[in-house]
Length: 91
Image (cartoon, rainbow, N blue to C red):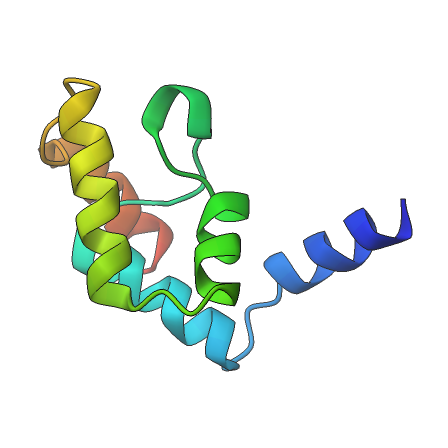
């Protein structure tokens, strides 16, 4: 239980550490929020964190998400997804 709490505290940290910069760079490159369900969308915050911890580059993770979205028939983010992401980011 403590590990879950610690992970989610780190996950929700909006500081400027390496994880947050990597996560923001991935979201910005994709134009969508990575806080999704791995089983339906093919990506999630938890999954992204594991890729980050394993040393995955932003470019490689972005390509992975795009490939997973394509395999699920989701394609590129819709205008609505991108607008929602930008609103959430205050842009």
